[in-house]
Length: 551
Image 1 (cartoon, one colour):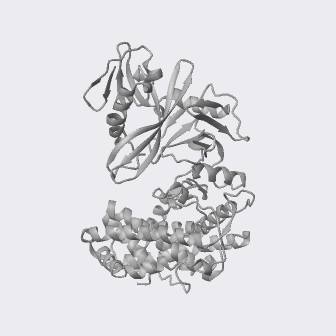
Image 2 (image 1 turned 90 degrees about the vertical axis):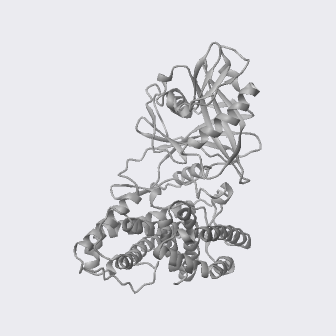
Image 3 (image 1 turned 180 degrees about the horizontal axis):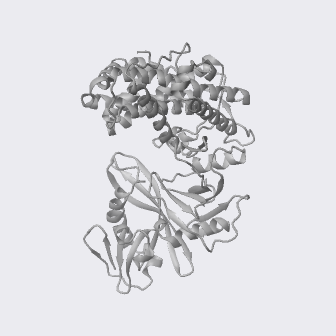
């Protein structure tokens, strides 16, 4: 048997031959060793969903091999453990298929993982999600609610009771090209399937929350239709995939917001003498009623856009009302703040802070202009910021903690007919699976959205294709006033809906305290990404931090 990587890897020759070698290929220790040590490390680095690109792979091990035999065909679902030299590991799930005729596969030879040759067989090993037969199989098995014995447990294909399909004989499927941390498949242009790439030793929060929100009649998310999990005795299920209704949409709220902000600044830029004279009496992040706005402000921002921002706040509150509704489910029952939560939060945020401060020290000379100035101020006041982080005091708080989205921003929201639909409940990519499930204040998600507004404004101002007539200083001053307006309108929609619905987020001082804390946490989190990837954009989280610490 010969195994060769499709990227010109030297051949590896083995003394083993059989016409049916694929059916028990992972019984061959020599093959498995070469696949782990040579093929998988190279292949993973080419995958957009692989989250370990910035780290050095020490080795990859096949932790579990789950065969899925259908008629004469065998697929494998591998659970891989990637261990890194930086002393951490991640687990991924990779389905495999063997194809002798590449024209059966959309991706063709150039997308194969490797070539497998025996004296009677010559073909390619593929990620099975690129093989139509495998995609059709998982859809069919969900519809039929199949339970398949595999490995030391069972592969369970679950279907929502409300989901009915007359036949799976004419199933059309395609893998979306915009692959990120997961792989998405569209079935019959009606259903959206998400294959989770990173796996965890318990239920994925995206699946868990999506199913729960549907049970609690939150209609502004995709409808849960089914899922795939690997189940073993005395262990939580491991989530492999989630099937949902495909939402018709006009794009995500990030693109929509960029368009709106761009339109606003273009209007202002047309008349160098024009000014945005919005100066709210309220402080930053306090609710602003649309009817309190001056006519010229409404005209410049547009009445429809103002209504939409308020509506987004309302939909956010409705999501949290649904997440807090069913007190019979322990995983979702609201709980009070307590010392254990305070210790967890302070440890989490202070560790994040220390990491970002280290990055800032290494990268401060890469920053320019205001970004460098703000970076130095932040560095000088780092002890003051750390004291605020460590000063979190649960004894001041009387509100309740609930499950939250955890990674809430404009990119997680779809728009259809000027309404909003919330998706993707996996939580922060850097957090452990258990940390993502910790119950927190709904204001954590509110802070995430407010920071997203800040990004949308400055992403527009940093667009080098735009030839602005105003100075940067003028643009930044207008941007901060505009940001205050957006935040105030959003907070009006959120707080009104939350309070009327009975969501316990505390009184005004508590709301202010929690919002300030989570805004600081989010801005510090963002700083790491920008310092690593886009130093010129570090000014965005740094301005956010300056605002919060009162500079």
